[in-house]
Amino acid sequence: MPDAFPDASFQPAMLIPAVDMSPTAAAPDQHYAIPGIDNGRLFRAGYHVPRTLDSRYPVLRRKPVIAMSANATRAWQWVDLVMSEHAADLQALIEARAAAFTTRFPVLRRLSGGNEERAKVEVVQFQGHPAVCKTFRPGKEIFLHRELAAISALRDQVPEVPEVLAHGENWMIMPLYENSERFRRSRFGLLPLPAARQLIDVLERLYEAGWAHLDMRGNNVIFDERAGMKILDFEFARPYDSLPASFAESYDIRGAPESLLQELSSEILSNVTYASRIESLTGLSYESLRHDPTWQQHLKRMLFVPTRVVPRLVRRELGTRVRPALQHLRRSASLRLRRIVPDRLTRRAISELHTSKRPGKEPA
Image (cartoon, rainbow, N blue to C red; front, top):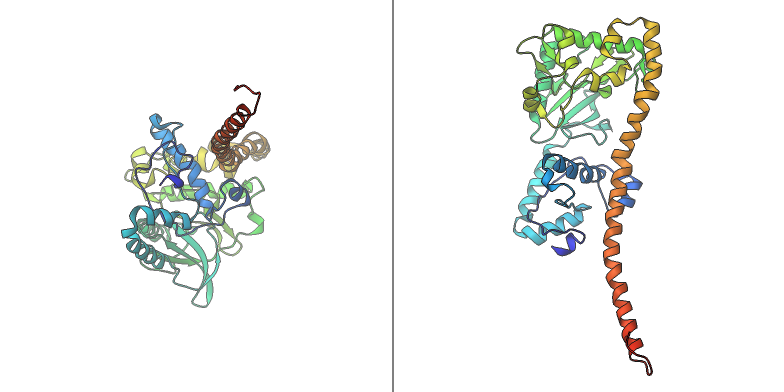
């Protein structure tokens, strides 16, 4: 497969066909960095997968160990080249998985965007009214079971937990909640101070009911004008085997044991403390949110944006867009240089050969 890896310094040892059930459109800068790319998630994978391998296996650091096709057409060319006898079975498997991931109800709009590692979230027409349908990927049904169990246990105790209108083998229907303008987050992601306090109160009531949410982030809290605050996404929610001594020591504030994170999903739940997940919504430390006077909280939130939020946004932009594009351009430039230099050397050698054959000229 030499044409598939023109800039690789290794021979391919394994072909891994991977199918994305929810591809996203590639951004213009991604098209520029990788001509022909047909899925924006491939761009992120091409950046994060090598970094993950480097962190886990230092011996591989700075060595090219993985190459990915830029689009589906190229991927099928690789399949035909390496495992053509399995191409029909692979196509049938892809079609079966796509059918299992099909939404059961008329779709009005998509809510989840490209963040569909476990499930896609859409507004659908359900019993004559708009509702939210969450359809889980094949093999990710365990997250549906966890969410249904948590909602069933908490719904009557904590009104901020949404109800489930219907569910099936890999889907669930919930009411459609819309964010109220009165509680809209600031341009830097901070909740209004009253909403931040209410969020912590809800998490404390979950703790008192014997549960930890374990995935609190901005997209998982909604302030509906009629229904009030709603906490979403209980895919990782877990009942306590032994209740911590206080809410301050709960999993949602202090963090969960490593063994539990490994059991649930170590790649996603690598850090679930208040400082890593919730402080970016409140703009205050846990102690400040619980104990400081209001005037001091407002002052600290004003300082939080320039000292914490802006640097984080810059690092995120560099990490997810600029740096991967620069790395790809650097690799492409290196490849072009390796192609150009031999051509120039060849032209120079031919020129010198012609010069040496001219009358009266000595070879250089």
